[in-house]
Length: 70
Ligand SMILES: [Zn+2]
Ligand SMILES: [Zn+2]
Image 1 (cartoon, protein in one colour):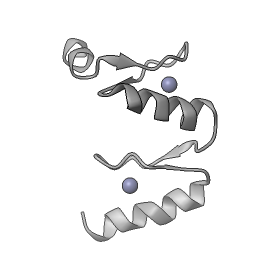
Image 2 (cartoon, rainbow, N blue to C red):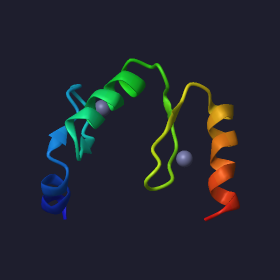
Image 3 (cartoon, rainbow, N blue to C red):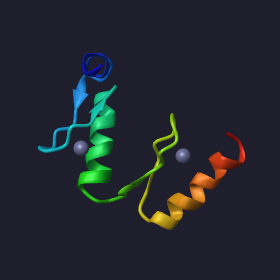
């Protein structure tokens, strides 16, 4: 199934050692800025959201909004 994900997400992360891939090149930049630059290391795990937060408690607070309306 790796071929399918490769095909659907043509833009790989530019950081060595990171194997994440993205649908759009702008998503790569956002990912690098937030995760690898450690600006906002906490990402919402809910599908279709993907918002980043600088603090884990901010993320937990945010995730409650998803749990309220699944
Ligand atoms: Zn990465
Ligand atoms: Zn979210």
